[in-house]
Amino acid sequence: MTIRAVVHKAEEGGFWAEVPALPGCMTQAETMDELRANLHEAVELWLEAGSPQAAKNQEDQILEFAV
Image (cartoon, rainbow, N blue to C red):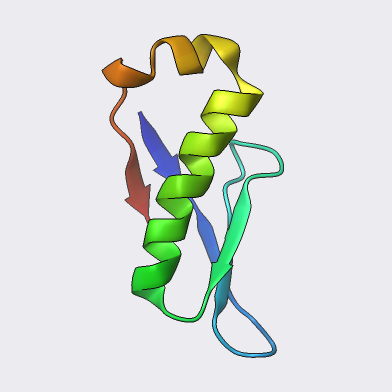
């Protein structure tokens, strides 16, 4: 599975990102490295909470980000 995130510069500094394919899945960070890590965590949490079927098959999925 490939996950795409839309990255925005935050007005107050840093970045925030949203994952259009996963409604409500978004995160923020001060640096791009931090944002990538936060995106990984946000997607994992969304899959666990938002999609019971995806959570069951989570060990079979590969998450790839294009930012």
